[in-house]
Image (cartoon, rainbow, N blue to C red; front, side):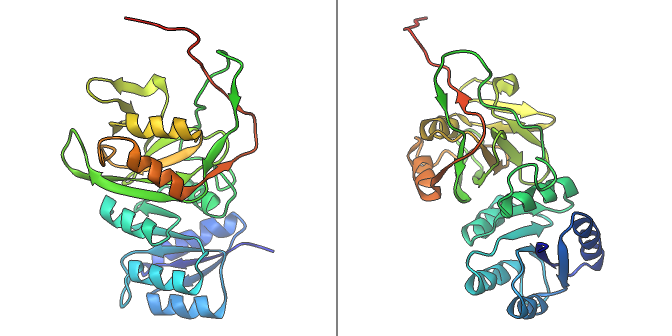
Length: 278
């Protein structure tokens, strides 16, 4: 049985483009041009996934998302939006959106998001937006930990410690072998949490690649390591929020999300075998 996707967008050209691409990928596609038509379609037949534009006539996408979740609490919804901002993304994710993508979007990135939302993992939805980089290379100690991601998406918002601006992060589950990847909310650029991309460590750690930077990542990465999370998509802009200045709020996020062990080779862990002093 083919997977059914409902596309809700008031722009005919976008609906036609998505119908063509998704049909080529083997999905069964239906369309709605506004919120009322979408609700009628949902009540007539449950799809497997909804792709929902924020800016719709009569019923806006965020209000429609709330209605969708009242009808089908577990139905995955991907929000697409022009002029995205972290506040809108955080609100949509808290309401249960599986992902939040800004227009104009990469079709490969959308297919990857669809794969994640449908539980197929990275690669089954058209491949990850960027090449996956494992957290640890072969070598080091003999300690091995299983690959692990989070069970559901979670969000946090606050203020950047160094930039002083309002910011936030959205943590999405990711497939085996993805690693920890910081991804721009506004573009499809990303940077893996790998030492090769450490751009600055003065007062805070900044990762940078291809014009995209993720600042002040150290508290979040330390928390992920403590919880054994090895595969994760972190959507953000600019700087990870400082929250209370410690890892406590990140711990609460991961407790809420829950952890999920994954198949595949384990991750080799480097251990400090003796004391070093400088």
